[in-house]
Image 1 (cartoon, one colour):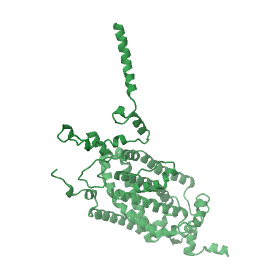
Image 2: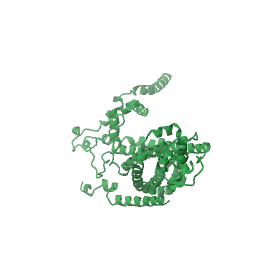
Image 3: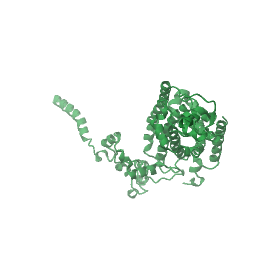
Length: 395
Length: 43
């Protein structure tokens, strides 16, 4: 009998877990209305989960127990129901904070933004800036410095007037400071704290924030200056196609004709205007939090045109909470700044060590006539008239 | 060289000036998001 009971006990002990597994039916009722295993798995796969079972389970004051009842003190909503109402933005909130974001207590985008900002964004920064520097170094080692081919004349031509150079240097100096302080803010926690410690980084971060926020105005003013001073010379024309077809003469040794700005310089100009303008606008959005919302309306318009569908993507999120607006503005501001910084690396290279005589244009405002004839032949003809030798040949 | 020096000077003047204007214009988030009228003392 004892042996039979022991056998029964063993079978029962083994059967209980199996039965427990069988009873874990993947249904809402089995979880008491809470999320199911299927919900969790779908969320982990990044699939859209129908949250109605939670977002709508926020209590009902109409069925509340009377205040005199012990269960009536919460007004018909339990603590979990109240927090769900916070979570889905349906709670009736009273707050002393009058900021535009005060009505959104909890929002979904925070973790996605934080993970992207601390992961993928830093990798993009490293590969984009580091890759550009490596590419320029390799280019210098392979191609070497672009020298003035012909014999120098000893004569100079005024390339840029003082006001043009003032605008350029205001833009350049503000961009460099903004780039450095922006990088301090972006990579500080991951890179600077391990290197210098919390105290030093705190000083750098506070200083960077002040400098970044206030120098931004100089960048915006300079952007307007260079736009109005140079836009006429940067309108694309047929000369640019010929220049691009010959890659600006970088490899063949031949110098394709160019006006005041060649096609490469025009690309830099429009990159600075368009990307710099976008950085300025998204920067203003960040400087006045929640006041300038750029992304919700843009996403809605793009969805209306069906743009995400062109790339096989799902619709862009809309509407956005005020905090999500700031998160997208921060990511956009950082990404576009990194792209423009990589472009400016190439510009600085070609304007300094990469090309003989190029720095004089912005340094002194005067360039060697032979340099000008080689790199901006059509412009020189306009300023000085045709080359005497060319004149002779054309007779 | 003179335009470069002038640009650096302008950079400093614009930055300090912008900061002073913004600080005295009530644009800080503290000014924008709080009000003594919304303080509830008797609830």
